[in-house]
Structures are given as structure tokens and as C-alpha cells.
Length: 343
Image 1 (cartoon, rainbow, N blue to C red):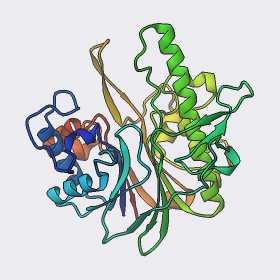
Image 2 (cartoon, rainbow, N blue to C red):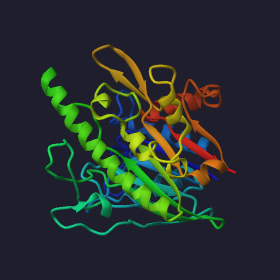
Image 3 (cartoon, one colour):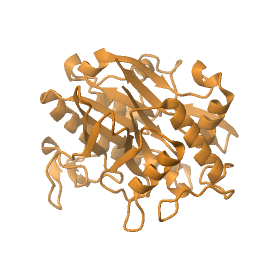
Image 4 (cartoon, rainbow, N blue to C red):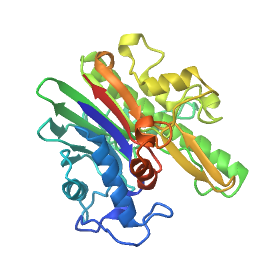
């Protein structure tokens, strides 16, 4: 079984309101790439991965006018993927959904949100409320609880493969980038506020993880965390990254989640680490890379997994030796897919 996560940059811009693919020469939301080129590249990458299921981050919009499921299933049919059925959870506020595209012959999948709906004033952390509601949390240590809401509620799935029951949680955590800042002081203020929100979201996810571990569930938490150990200077201000919080690294081994790329980054702070995203820096006029995308699993799944793989266009030999695939990974998104194979 192969499960993947992939953030496909602004996928919503590739479809019209009827879910039809915009295969034309108009610019996509990806710089320097047309809509037809990005759609073609996505098809090449998905075909090469040949997954049983993929958590799609930044999936097409779900709203009164648009359907995430229709768009993804149209794409899968055009490509000829066996992962041809889609499921989406609570709609986001951002036209960037979290969805799961899967092979219905290999697994049964349903949206299965956990936790009770909270009141307007939010619920406390120990209740781990439903992800489309509110959480009361003191985010800045002033003794006053604030109500936290996800702009992109995580997608919770119940998965049946015939051999096992799995729980999946798809995540697109708050970005920490100081978008819109016009000065150094404003950038610092926005960065700290975003870091607090990102950590609050990860604390909420960790509360759900602990519930599943206590129940003995086989769990996978995957997606774009916009964070990682040692990623920015503000981590020192708060003591840990959101990734470390969700993994529960301060807990005994049976209560932790496992991702070998995350562990490598933690143990190699400031040194060599894997990367899953590549961004253009307009000030320095060059590309920078970061580890933002993870597939974390419970201890029972970690023992059965055979390989975690980042489909990096240059660093993965299997991708790099196929020029068409390497070029497609770069054209499709600013993130690279991550897969996990289970025996």
C-alpha cells in the first residue's frame, strides 16, 4: 500500500465552476507556467507515483458554486488514475481545500470528524473539539484564553483496506510568513502572531492524536505543516516547532508519531536535512528549500512501513534520472510529494 501527501500550488485556478479542467495557454497561479502545463505536470507526477491514496493539499475550492470532488475526479479520469474517487471534509475559508483522492478498489474511505461541536465561546483543550469549531487556548501566556479557529480545518478520515482500519488526518497548518508586512517591526509582529496561531493549531491536532493513540488506533497525520524543527528564529521564542508538538517527542515512545525526515531534521539542526518545498526568494534572487511536508504514523505503522520517499526532482535518484518526471515535479507545484510504502 502506498499513501502520499502533496501540496499542489493553487490547484483551484486550474478548474472552472463546473469542475472542468482549464487546459489552455493562460497563466496558472504558478509563476511562469501555463494552466495546461501545470495540469500536464500534475498528471505525469500522479501517474508516476501510482498511489492507493493521496492527501491533496490546496485542492480545488469547495463552495456553493464549486465542487472539490468533481474537479479531482475529473482530473483523475482524464489521467486514467486508479486513485479516482475523492472525498473532502469541512470547507476552508481560503479556496484551498484538503481532500483525499483514492482507489476505491483498494480501500473504503469516509469523512469521519471526531470531537463534539463547541459553543460560540469555544471548548477547552482537554475536550479536543471538532476541527470546524473553536478551541479556547491561552496563546500568548497572559493568562487569558483566546478562541482559535482553523482557516483550513484538518480532514479526518476513516479508511478500511480489507486488512486493517486506519485513521487519517490531513493538515494544512497556518503559514508563518509575514505576508503584507511593510516594515521590519511589522514583519516581526506578524511572524510572532502567525507562529502562535500555527502552534495553537498543532496543539489542537496533538490533542486529537492523543485520543486516537489512547484508543489504540493506527493513525497517519500528513500534510503541509508550514513548520519544522529549526526552520526559523522564532522557534527559540516558543521552545519547539509545531511538528515536534504533533509528534509528541516529549512523550514515551509508544505515544509518539514517527516520520524519519522529521527525526533527521531534529538530529541535524543546522546541518544536512531533507527538503520538500522550493521557493523563489525575490530579495536574494535565488531558490531556497525547506522541509514542510510530513507523513507521521503511529508506532505500529512505523514498524510495518518499508520506505518514506520525497519525490525531489534533484535529490531522489529515481526522479532525477527521468528528465520528464523531474521537470514535471518542478512545474506542478512548489512542494514535492511525499510517499510512504507499507508492506
